[in-house]
Length: 192
Image 1 (cartoon, helix red, strand yellow):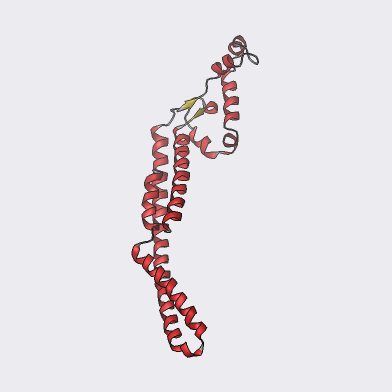
Image 2 (cartoon, helix red, strand yellow):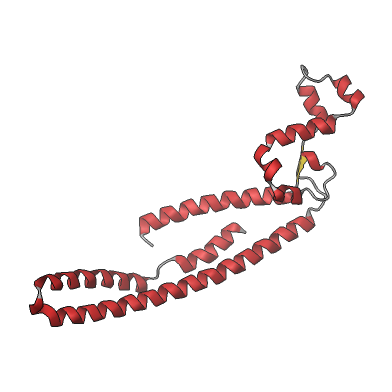
């Protein structure tokens, strides 16, 4: 989903060849205008012609930039709507299905020093042990994350399970970071 949305937005952000030519022309006009200004009053007529061309070209590029930013805002709204629909769809399809669950009894077996298996069976606190371990494993997210609490709705062991939304959001965040890096590399190497 993130990949499709980024490609959808990337097509609009890339500067077209026509616009690149206009930007190059703008730079050369600025240089020529600065050079003519240095010549003084003798080149006043030529300087004023160049300044009018410069203003006209700047106005045209400004209009192109405004149109692009309006299109990008509209596309970002559409991408956000699709993302919300995907979140809702994943939530409904995987409601009550844990994708990752920590077993407290296995934790008791692994940590022989702290808890004995007989003690865990007698006290029946394997769910508490799993919840405690899970909270420590996902410390900042488990205490702050409203999204994690939403994704746990309907899960049988809410304290020690992860729902499908968290997995989807992690993948989405990873792809966003990766694609942002690739866009930066692309922008630096091709000057878009």
